[in-house]
Length: 193
Image 1 (tube, one colour):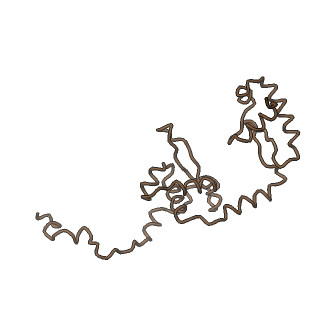
Image 2 (cartoon, helix red, strand yellow):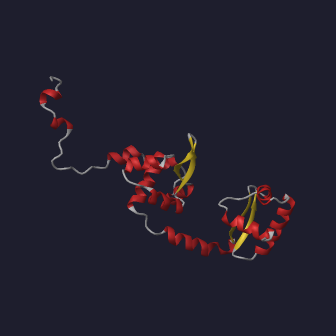
């Protein structure tokens, strides 16, 4: 059976959020004091490594060593500098102006599957999932503070007015397509029929 330090390290590695000593003790069926002692030993053994143990109010979490922040930031930014696709930008715009919004609503607006675009935006940290308060099984999407920082905004209210943006957009004309007025006889338009 693996030792307690190894188990704790594995759990903290796979967790996407901090874990409290109490939660770890319950999960591993060990006394909380033993968890705290082992976590202290783990923190000490990892102090100079590339991945360190952080302790905050919410609990314990593994993170990259702050001494390596520049190289880690450069690595992550290289991936983020890759250009977003037009589809991803479209989805990001929909989320920004209609948040919180479900995937089904996004796909209804776009008329196509948006799974790949949503995933790309989640990975880049530009949008986030939140639980749907009306349906515990579903998620909604909203923009993140990182998105606002990227655009140099302090609030969603700083986004350009949507109606003003769309009023300046001219839709292309479709040849052969008649407007509603042109397709009805004159007598119908005047309410005579």
